[in-house]
Every structure is written in C-alpha cells, then in structure tokens.
Length: 107
Image 1: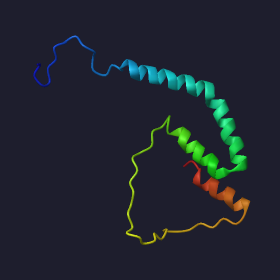
Image 2 (image 1 turned 90 degrees about the horizontal axis):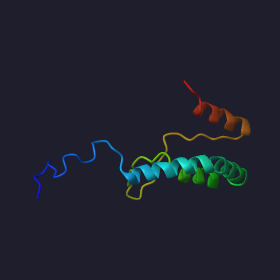
Image 3 (image 1 turned 90 degrees about the vertical axis):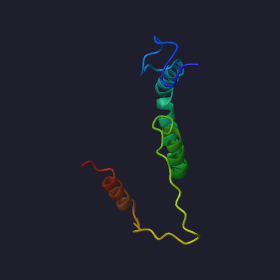
Image 4 (image 1 turned 45 degrees about the vertical axis):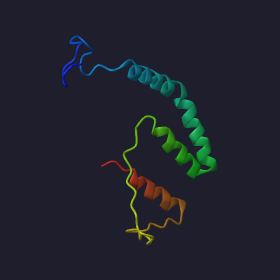
C-alpha cells in the first residue's frame, strides 16, 4: 500500500486534467444549451403571459443547471414574525416599470 501523498503510478493523470465524466457532462450541457435555448426562452415567455410566478419559478429551476445556486441558510425565528426592513407598494404599471428599471439599472 502506498504512503499517503505518494502513488504507484507516477505517470498518472496530470493535476488539473478533467475526468471523462466531467468532459461528458460539459458536452451534454453544451448540446442542451444550444438545442433548447430558443425553446426554453419561448416556453418561459409564454408561461409569463399566463402566470408570472410559475414562469419565475421555472426560470429559477432551469438556471440552476447552468449557474449552481449558492448554499442557502435557513434562519429560525422561534415562531416570531419577521418584520421587513421596508415595504414597496406598487399601484400602477408605470410604477412597476420604474421599479424594475431602477433594480436592473447598470451603474
């Protein structure tokens, strides 16, 4: 049995070389993104017209395959209500658009 940190195969796979499994996953990802991008966008856009909440949920589920989500942290409140720092009330579509423009602005 080799000592820790040593190998019986000194000419083995170089450090940083991707495994065949990784290469296969990347190839599948590339094929899927190319083949299904237009269909996925059209599906979510059509769903958005009917149900924005479901469309957003579908988008979040889909995007996790391409950009893994960060680890989530659950906060426990011991049964107490959490009071938001502030609440934004949008009463018109114009206000909604202004808020979206503000959130999506590029600095």
